[in-house]
Length: 422
Ligand SMILES: *Cc1c(COP(=O)(O)O)cnc(C)c1O
Image (cartoon, rainbow, N blue to C red):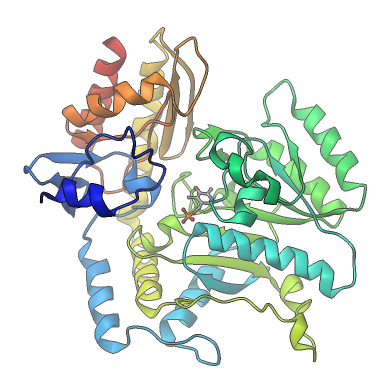
């Protein structure tokens, strides 16, 4: 049996309709920016392996951290026990975040980091005996695929069967120059009802909605309203964290900072499964009591896995290197000049950039749908050109690992240009 046949027999892939799915790309190795398939064909990893990879695949410094940690200590329980790499990571990450974000809760992925943030918000008010439990979220948002995360995400096609089980959430529209004031008015009315516990939002860039971008000025106005009404703010920086936006965190562009932030994806350079929920002291203190029931009674088997923590620390080492930020700045510059070039194309619209992420829509006349024809045509077209690039519907976007060279970026650019000319 071939690998493809065995895969078909036993593997259930994410976001895949197996009835119509074609053969899967068979990748056998990954190094730097390149993925290599079973036939030896190489592909540039233009979307950073589902937006997670930061420093390139197989980075020696990351590899060394894994080996060292494995031979020192692989995994231990994290209740009643602590270990050096978890503490180092908590210490270093809180030093990089705003001063009031001081307490780090560990989990395994972005969805769990979000679940935990929401549970912290709900229990914060519960512990204080206040009846506030509603969330405000934004249309088009994606916060993960567990129930709480789905509840605050965009409702519709992707999670229809589960909708009866979601809790009640209010939504504001995605901001544009026309509706910003109306959204803020709506948020102000909702918040002043006193029913809202939390505002949950992807700061500056909505990833899964198609890399939709909005300004920090708007976000500051929205978060100011939340703060005024004692509504706790969760920033979902699962995608925007670790340099993607051109700064370490999207919140570094904002005046108002959140009460909680969820981190994953780039946290471990895209190598290990780890999520962090970082909360303010104010939230943490609401859980302190003689009553065990007021503690956050939540945990995962692999909470603060030492190897994952060691990898996250090693990734932070790389973010301390000047070269990493020079690379990020280069990508930002290339994106900006490519954006200008793209604006010459008649079949391109809504070109947008936030740091290392560049996105645009291909005009189809059928609107922006995840199942758009553009995706079906573009994906194999780019593979043919040696580039792994997965559009979201008719949105084509580039968010490469930071180790990409100018020549490799040029290859992506030329492939996109030839797709558009086709
Ligand atoms: C990917 C993502 C998540 C979910 O993270 P998983 O690790 O896939 O569970 C949550 N929020 C945002 C903004 C994401 O991009």
